[in-house]
Each structure stands twice: as C-alpha cells, then as structure tokens.
Amino acid sequence: MKDHMTFQPGEEVCKGPGGRPKFLSPLLPLSQAKYSFHDNLLASLRRGCCKGVFLLHEAWESVGSTGGSGAVGTQSHRRPSSQATVPASTVGQRPHRKAPHPHHPAPSLWLQWRGSRVKLQRSFTAYAQQALKSPHNRTLLKAMASSMAPLVPQKVGIVGYGRLGQSLVSRLLAQGSELGLELVFVWNRDPGRMAGSVPPALQLRDLTALGERHPDLVVEVAHPNIIHESGVQILRHANLLVGSPSALADQTTEQRLMEASNHWGHTVFVARGALWGAEDIRRLDAAGGLQSLRVTMATHPDGFRLEGSLAAVHTSGPRTVLYEGPVRGLCPLAPRNSNTMAAAALAAPSLGFDRVIGVLVADLSLTDMHVVDVELKGPPGPTGCSFAVHTHRENPAQPGAVTGSATVTAFWHSLLGCCQLPCRPGIHLC
Image (cartoon, rainbow, N blue to C red):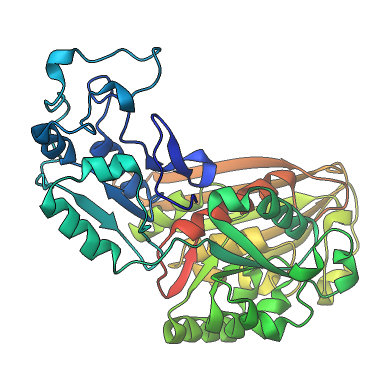
C-alpha cells in the first residue's frame, strides 16, 4: 500500500489476491469508460476483494460547478495524447456516465468500508484536494478519516515446513507485500530444516510463544497432532487455517475447537485441499439432496503414512483395498492420507464423519499420481431415479509424496480466500 492515497491516470492503486483490484482509479475519462468508477467499486466490494474504499462519486458535479482546475475533462488529469480528449465545450460540465446504483442515492461523497481492517489514509493528493472543493465534502471526509487508522497488512504464521509449508513460505515472502500479507513466523518441529531458507528473524522456536508475533492467521500444514495439542491455544490469538482436517474426526478435538472459536471470536477455516466439488457438495447437502457420499483415494504404497493396525497390512497384487468404511475410523489410522475424505465429511454435515465412506487403495501402477474419486447420490425421486455425480481427479505427485502438485496450488488459494472472508466463529471450509 502506498503512503498516500495517490491516484495516477488509469492506475490500479492496490491489487488483491489473484491480481483483482482493491482500488480502481477514478481518473480514467468517464465518457469513455465502460463502467463508472462507482459501479466498479461496488462490484469489487461484492466480490469481497475490497476491505476499504473511499470513492468520489458525485464530486465530479460539485467540482464542475465551481469551474475548478480539478474538474473531470481537463487535460491535466488525462493520459497523454493516446487518450481521446473531451471537447472544450464540456469542460466544467458533468460527463455523461451511467446512472447511480438504484439502491444508493447520489451524495457528494461515498465512503464504504467493512471490517476492522478497512482503513483510510489522512493524506490526499492534489487531485483529491481539487475534487473535494465542496465544504460539505471536506467536512464529511474529515470526520470519517479521523476515525480510521493507517492500513496494515494481515499477519500470517506458518506451522510446519514440509513441502506444503515451504511452498507457502516462499510465496508469502515473494508476493505477500503486494497482496497485503506479512509473514511473521515459521515454526517446524525440527528447527534445523528451516536453516538457510527461512530468515532467522522469522523462525519461531517455541510454538507457545506465537502470541508475541501477533498473527491474524495461523496456517497449520504439519500434522493432525498440532491441532490436537495446540489448536485451542492458536485460536486464542488468531484465526486458524487447518491443513490437517483429519484431526477433526476426533470429536473431543472438534468440540474444543468450537468452544475456543466461540469464546475468542476467531474462525476455524478448513482447507478443502484435493476435494473437487466441495462447494457443490455443501450446497446439495444444505438443500437436503444428499443421501450418500463415498471418497476413494488411490496411490502407490510409498505415498502412504499409515499408523496402528493399518500399518501392518501388506499389499497383495497390483491393487489392494487397505480400508473401506466410515471416515471417522480411517482418520486416526491414516492421518496424513485421509484429509480429502475429512474435508468431504465437513462439507456434508448431514452425513458427517460417521456416514461419509472413505476408501484407501494401494495401487502399484500409480507411482507418480494420486487419484481421488468422489461418488455421491441423492434420494430417489418420484420415478425412482436418483441424482448422482462421479468425479475422477488425477493429481500428479512426486514418487512417495503425501501431497500432490495441484493440492499445493489449491491450498495457496485457500489461504488467500480465508484472508478475504469475515471473521466469524465456527468451522468453515475455505
């Protein structure tokens, strides 16, 4: 974010995740713009990519009526000669553009914001000073600006420095500043793994001291045990993005997280990871149209990290079914290989961990790939036929890797997505 609200002709002042603009310049020639600045900003707010916007809506008219040098249509605020000019006869007149939104009458100045992070700078450019010549505008703007603090980035902490953690840290260090995100710590059970790749100032040796870094979001990409042991403590200080949703198969852990979330007002986000169609499953379940859900995950035996009785199972033949049954029973036996199934159970709360079926398959032919099949059915209709969907997802993976390549990218977008969502207690897929 710039030190001042500086608008240059045609400039996108601040971009959100994925390059979406947070602020759009009001200085493009409005007579040639496809949409008005007001409409673009409202659309941005609806998409959730604006945390705070001040927008000069009808200031054009008040400026034009004064004949001031800041009026829209003067050459001083246009691009160079590549932009067409407005005839001199229109200088001082309000340019033709779309009518204001029907639900928003046209005051001289609109200020829109949402959430505690929406901020407005106190310093304005010469353009803004020219545009806000109306005494009413100046009084309104001063009152609103005085109640707002400078814009600060969201602070993110990463717990776990395996393949997924390394990818997130690398992206945050490279792109965080332009996305409004600041990496404040990285923790790993083996601190030596961070040596040479994570700046010493960002290395957190003791996870119980994470509060000293004042994070807004803590991202867990380590092991379900971190959620069991430290999830409640994390929620005391920040929102939590769970990368090991298999931890929530433990009812005590899920209940404790819910209680901590409600008590401290922080959100438990759950990354959907490799689950394709999570939002469709959630909507179908909410509408009462989901009767059964089955998730099958197949890969080479070297890609499994099995525990308990499942670790003693030997593969026989090219394809062996290691487990088939409720997801709740699978998660403690394959905590790092059942996260997709756990996400499905959370997406379909009417079925939950006890009625969503998980199937784990060892396939010797899948040396460099994870294959996830999701099969769902709805209740029979009047004709006796049922709605049914079957998706087949092939995710390239390094030999022996727990996390597929596409899952790494999906998790990054989950991180960006939950940073744009409002803070609300409870457990929510992201």
